[in-house]
Length: 194
Image (cartoon, rainbow, N blue to C red; front, top):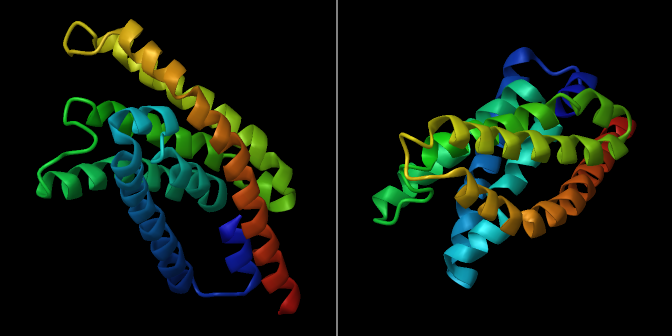
């Protein structure tokens, strides 16, 4: 979606890369800050319920596409871990980090596969988000099933956390398409004004 808006402005390749890099960095920063705010207000259980890091990752996939979305999804938990480790309280925990990198990468890639459809009609953001959520959570659970003999995580434990997170997923299934719809309207307005 963002690529189409940039192409409509006839921007150079380098300028497009700069814009996409800035948007990606902003989304990654948001993916670091939002969990901190939720944990500050609601504690660790709030993070499991509301899944605040997922929101900017899903937005990134929808507007940036699968390649740039992948970078946002994979880097968000890693940057969060590095920043919060420097502050003395790593989030996510080191043991959970590889699973979250994989999960959020899947979230972003799946939602990013819809970016051209979203560019044509923003209603596609809804199935993009829902399919990304299902695939991402399934990837997380599948990885746990494969590695549970080597980690402290079990399938029942993670399934319990997934069920707790249904509230956050439901909210994101409403918020992300609404945000994407608004962003698309802004991009179309700019396109029409050129």
